[in-house]
Amino acid sequence: MSGDTLQLIHHQVMWTRLISVVEEQAQALLRTAFGSVVREAGDLSAGVYDTGGRMMAQAVTGTPGHVNTMAMAMQHFLQRFPIESMQPGDVFVTNDPWMGTGHLFDFVVVTPAFLDGQPVALFACTSHVTDVGGRGFTADATSVFEEGTLIPHMRIRTNDQLNDDLLGIIAANSRNPVEVLGDIRSLISSNDVGVRRLQAMMQEFSLNSLDDLAAHIFTASEQATREAIAAVPDGRYRSSMTLDGYEKPIQLEVSLQITGDRIVVDYAGSSAASRYGINSPKCYTDAYSVFGLKCVIAPETPNNHASLQCFEVHAETGSCVAPARPSAVTARHVIGQMLPDAMFGCLVQALPDLTPAESAGSIWVLAMSGNTDMTRADPANDFNVMNVGLGGVGASAHTPGLNTTAFPSGVGGIPVEITETESPLLFRHKEFICDSGGAGRMPGGLSQRIEIGNTDDVDFLVSAATWDRFDNPPRGRAGGHDGRAGTASLASGKKLVGKTTHCIPAGDALVVELPGGGGFGDPSERDQSDVEADLEAETISTSTAREVYRLPDDSSKA
Image (cartoon, rainbow, N blue to C red; front, side, top):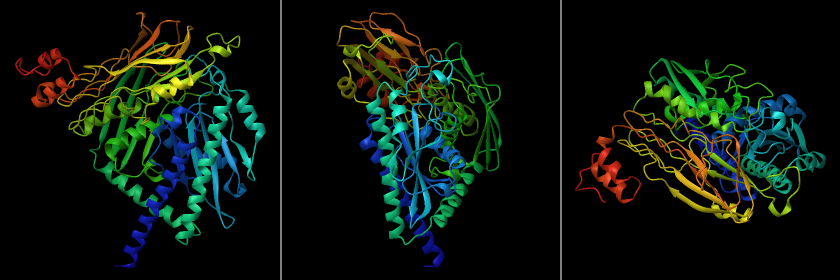
């Protein structure tokens, strides 16, 4: 075996080990987080960077919205704090939406790693915290100044000593100060775990620098990504997508130019920024646009600085996908998490058999609180909790869509028992909705119905900030039917709309029915035995089996 081959194997072993380092970093965050959306749903990211601020590896655990924005956020830290100015024991923090991960609820924490007194890498992690003050988790604000406390790039630890003044400011502006401080400390601890594991790895492999390993990672990743792009037919592909929006519908206009091994996305013509907090900062737009492209074009290539740099995203400043300060951005999920489907609308023209139907997109964050009168304290009804509702995923040419799965965010569900423990709320129902997935040769994923009431005889609030697809359900592909549209109401019957905040009266309950995934292909081509199995599992109704899937009467069950 040649020396070059041995060196290549050595680099691959170290690369795999580096991924295990950041995965342990992420798991440390999961194990120590206070907030249920992090601890239970995995709404976080973790990664390691070279001393130039280029992401070498990310943890498998984490969301694209966090990981891909954090990959770009490191440069903002280094502009403020050059690597030469950093010392062992330093930790830096920000929750700036435009220079972090898109809204104030995500804190990005950066820690330099040293070996023998020299900086060798940087670790970063981020997670969603429950409350940062302001109006809370709602799309009702009209500027970022109303949405909470913005922390610019700052040192939060120096010489291993925490900045208690900064922590005091954060705590004083949160309705959940213990939880928020616990989450920030867990972020810091997570990076510390990464630093220790990296130091052990470098000592084991007798490394005093990661430069050679970084060069190998970046060269291999860029080559693989560009080869995958080059395999896509050249051309300009366009698509349009309409979202419910807040004060009016949002129109997304997308142009995808593929030339050789280069892809340029352009959102020219998309709607102007909303007056309310549903806008997607450019960093978040880039994150989910590139994720959508990689899902179809290069799903097997590692996600790092080099592979991300193969894609270029343009958007007009002041648009809903590149809002200018101080636009409101809390519910950036509404637009940002729909962007992979916008990418698919272009890619289906080039790769029709590889591009899935549309999914529910934006997760429905169920941010619920008990004090409906913010002008006075009410300790007996003082709670502030978060759960999530997950819709269906679009089907592909060869696979049915996943049921109640968060695509593209990838977060998990929060067990109802957790929310019930943290509040007086009771989940009365949580169940699949029959016929909610779009019919097709491959059916879309099912959505769910959730009903929540208060065991105390008082009102409670719920924010509909991220609820969308009431009017624009996930579209099917290649003859597949659209998924079911989302709905929301009181159990007593009154219909609720998306985006704003609703008061659920005492004795009543909140009912949400999430969107289902779009189907793929002509339903009449679905295998009859699969239709019979769906009917037996009660995921489709008898009428759908007969009228849509053309199942003979003697095969269907009453």
